[in-house]
Length: 344
Image 1: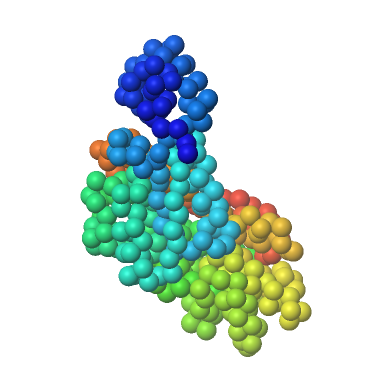
Image 2: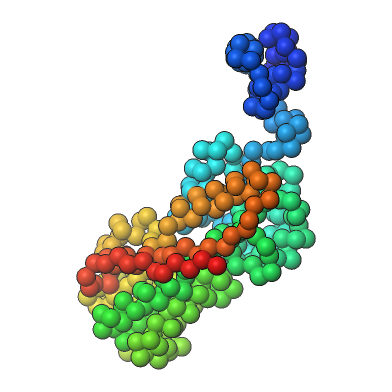
């Protein structure tokens, strides 16, 4: 059995309250007294009981993260950014995923109660009512790329419209007039904004959007592969394809290669997110760069501010700009340009 806090106090010749002050770094303790306590902890191999400590401090030193999925480079990069910021501040991260089932989402939200000091929510399916029903008002929450109307919460969003507009405009600037678009899920707010940016850029270039050139997708490689096959069957074929995320662009690239279609010689291709593998494909994938890990870091830093202020801070909503990264998959000169940042 491990030693108890009482045994540590006896060995160091101090009260349990003094040991607690050292463990929690709360209140003044003389240097020599602190040294004796730390020596006793080391010799007895004492490990503080997390649950008991949280009852005393009313803090778990744990942050919850709610994600729609745990698969893929995008989410792993988000988690990496969150985890790095958390560890720098001495916090642990508790992660849960779901699969777009509202009842499941609400059950996960309830499961976080009492177990975390704050919550980062990245979900297209959460609404303000669900948050109010299932979370205490005192729990700090940061919405990450999660549009929730009617909620006074910190929020960090992406300029999805601006990024899609910039990539579509670039393809049109290369002379493409039949630019296909592989859509994301209809219920996903990011997907809707990226489609809106695509359509607006076409109109700005004097090109009428065509329903036949908009192919449904679900952000997966399989959907991109299926979309690529559908696009190859069109007559006439598009000369450029813009996928609403890189995973679908990668699936489409495989379908094109399987059919003997050269990229970018026969057909230009671009994606969205700029996941790490995008630059290592053959040809390297043009994409709309999203600072994925930085998004996670920003969300965690904002949440830690809320935790430290006990939710008494001023709430902020910000939109993070995207960057156009042009590589070999769509031809044309290399460029890197940033979308305009909008803060509200």
